[in-house]
Amino acid sequence: MIVSEVSSSDVPSELRPIHVPRRDSARGEQEDPLSSKLYVGNLSFNSTEDDLRELFSQHGTVDSVAVITDRETGRARGFAFVEMAEASAAQDAIRALDGNDFGGRNIKVNEAQDRRGGSGGGGRDRY
Image 1: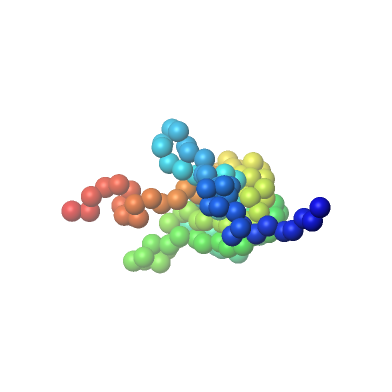
Image 2 (image 1 turned 30 degrees about the vertical axis):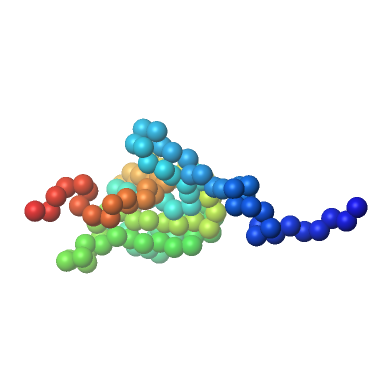
């Protein structure tokens, strides 16, 4: 019996496995299981990307940190996004850091949610 390797192009598309994101039934949104991108809220306005990188690197490799700033003033808005190299490291960071003191404030750490719609206005009309 001869066994040869089968590539995905040899398998009809209807037989190939597909990734189906989990649906958050409470809000009707789809979310990717085990995301590695985190939302960090209630930050001190003095928190820097380096501070956050140091804090989160205790739980795994940090791919990126983005402290969100006001477009007009350039001042920090009190939240950031941290992307970890592995989803398991992100989950460890959530368990360890959510609700803990950082820079004199109890920070909120959870999985980042996709911005659907892209209006940036929080669902409010601008006019």
